[in-house]
Length: 451
Image 1 (cartoon, one colour):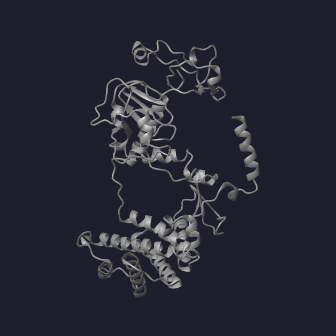
Image 2 (cartoon, one colour; image 1 turned 90 degrees about the vertical axis):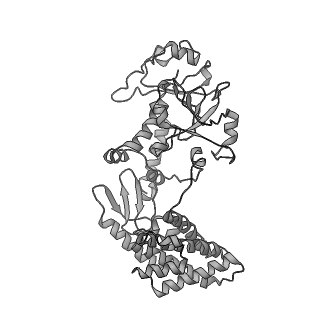
Image 3 (tube, rainbow, N blue to C red; image 1 turned 180 degrees about the vertical axis):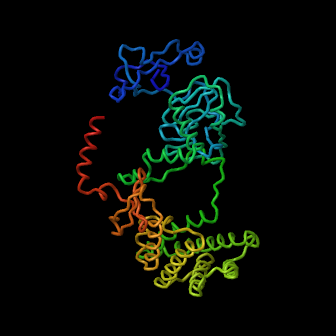
């Protein structure tokens, strides 16, 4: 039995122990690892009379960790996966401590991770699963590929909610379960004050980016790929199209074919944000499914200011969109890009003035930096940054010069990294401390060697 409660049912040879360490050097020293209770009920279930525990050995260790390198099947003979564990009632995914949300419940009443193989817990009585999946290990890995992508859209996958496992009588639980359950319950049930204290003590995505890491796109957890509707409201839908439309506009500078994608995406954004504002002013107005000119007229009738020049830009963009959608389209390079630029300028001030949103929060930071060459966007971004800084609590934030734009608009929040309120640049450590960076790398290498 490993110190965290994992049960290994085959003998371990010395050369299969890949690592062993303990926290004996902590101040104050860690308490010796207690011996876990082992009853006849446990022996009957696991088929082990009295498994060896670290606390049975001649040495005393403070919460040791043993890493072993050998192959043992995740599922027993005749064991099948009945459902994926999901914390839907808590508004969360149920993640194993290996950072994967592929934890399953089986017909042996076990909860275990199908990525790292770790056992989470064993229940004393079964949970009722309507229409269970009944998947073997081979079928599971055939269903979800190496990158966790759901490969068979015809297979019905069911879930069991974490709260059912939480409330069940558990025969055995490991540290994996305790930590995973603690994460779900904390994020779902903590008070705002508790969460604020927690945010000040963890490594956040902002800190990782600052340290040189880059976000990588990945499929959503398996449970999010099946049995759930994928919904976008007007604003979320517009944000997605704005991000791709702005990127296409920038690429069109050297790739004229991208004008097509920019036209389609940006007109989609215009339609959605106009409807979003109209829906705020008159919730029933969209039931009649008004077209774009009608929406513009309705907004003006309710006092929303849209200039004649902006209406002309939107009209020209709509004609380009219609030509692209319905047949042959002839587009003049400079004229088309001028229309697209005017559209982005309109979106920038309209969503800010009418919807209290800023397009700089949505557009990719590298694309936003290039868009800031447009004077209207640059001036508005400066005004936005000044408004952010005016409301900033300097007890919790530092403000300094941005390495990219040179403005005094770089905001650093404790334990959350830095971001420029003007250009959205996220600096890395070598940007923030260029002189100390080589020394930092040396200390980091020594730290890794010590480990």
